[in-house]
Length: 101
Image 1 (cartoon, rainbow, N blue to C red):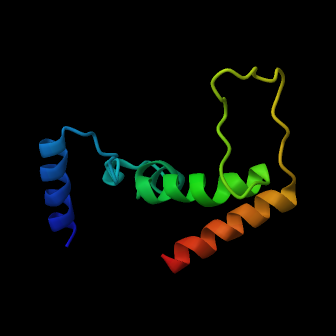
Image 2 (image 1 turned 30 degrees about the horizontal axis):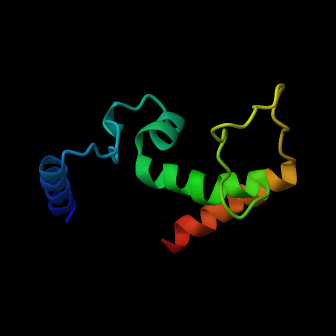
């Protein structure tokens, strides 16, 4: 089944001249469990969960806010660190969302 999806992605990216994000980054070269899970395994799902579930909860919004809007001034200084409760809620929501998918 994975081969069929890879072949469809290859054909579509060639026909429409678009770059697709890789799903994996050579997981067999992992040096630790952390490296395998955080940096090499299922990159698309991790990015999607981070942008759609984790970051909106951390930022306290229902949608992820852009980091810089054109024409607006950037605020100087460090970003406010989210509370432990907010990080726990965001992490739990990611686990629940990944279990539903």
